Amino acid sequence: MQRSLTLPGVRAGSIPVLAVACGVMVGNIYLCQPLLAQMAQQFGIAEKAASLVAVATQVGYALGILLIVPLADMAKPALLVRSLMAVTAIGLAAAALSPNVPVLLVASVCFATVTVIPQILMPLAPTLVAPENRGRSLGALQIGLVLGILLSRTISGAVAGFSGSWRAPYALAAALTTILLFIVPHFLPEAKERAPTRYRDLLASLPSLLRHRSLLVSMGMNFCIFGAFSAFWATLAFHLETPAFALGPTAVGLFGLWGAPGALVAPAAGRFSDRFGTAPVNAAALCATALSFAIAGTWGAASIIGLVVAVNLLDFGLQSGQVANQTRIFGIDHTIRGRLNTVYMVATFSGGAIGALTGGLAWTLGGWSGVCLLGGGLAIVAAIILTTDTFATTRIAPQQSDVE
Image 1 (tube, one colour):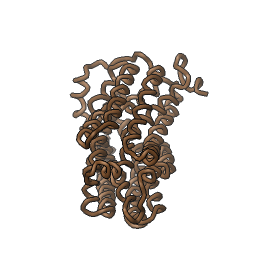
Image 2 (image 1 turned 90 degrees about the vertical axis):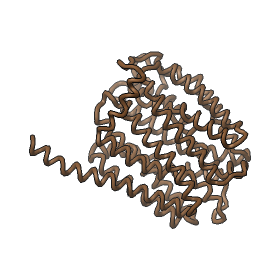
Image 3 (image 1 turned 180 degrees about the horizontal axis):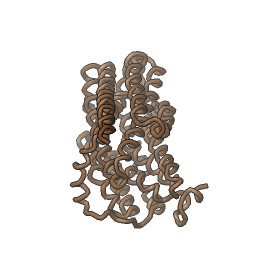
């Protein structure tokens, strides 16, 4: 089956291998989330300080998207991926051996900066298949990303619970990344057509992209929603360790698995975006996100079932909104999609970093209720951005029609 999907001369199994690589590499960003309470206990630090580890990974990933992903337009794919995987494995090993929190924070920023390989593989996948299979190839990699985000928490929590240490999941991630280092480059082309510009010119062109209103709208919404998502996950471990639940990292990790239905349904948002436009899909995603925090703050305050429902709604809201946002920005200009995605994802993970930081502060000041109020407030801000753009678009369109 895979031979018919890829172009002649492309190694069989390329798309599944890239999907697995996307899942494993993006999982490096999220594996810390079920471990934060255990880190706080073993290092003897406040929970707010432990949440800085989640902040560090978001900051590192945002930096990597900004500074490294543009290299994909210039470098040989196999060489670039091999190099990034090698440095990622070293960074993960350093995190596993960290003697204190400052070292762990530095290691987290470093390995997160270079584990941006999924953002390099996603634009590369369509070049390996026939034009009629491009959607299938991107869908396969998107499923890999979603499963990586979800299962990384589950596996990380389970490994930490079994071993009794937060260090074991980092060691496992380093081992998996090392294995992929010897496999994935063989499924990538050794060379590609290079961008007709220099690296510094690619970076210098990024600010000019902000003139596109549709890009700004997508950036603003995902900044808020991914911030809310990160605030939720950066504090869930603390919530589940309260007397109302008294659960450890294994249980926290299982929430990644329990949230799978909501996340795996979300890719269908692409078909709805094509049929009905992106704004209705964004509206549905924002409603789901706001409802998730309302349920988490009430029913989920002392109920596992309530939290499971909230997680599914939150995963659906994030993933479906992401599909709609990227559909919107990729319609701007197909010749600059890589850089459009760079700017958009920098905003996304900057929101994630700020969300994880403010989530820790909200937990300290207001507990779980404070976190849910923060998440719901961010969803409202995103809704205001969407509503403002919708009204502006409906007012501009008739004027453009009259001119024509």
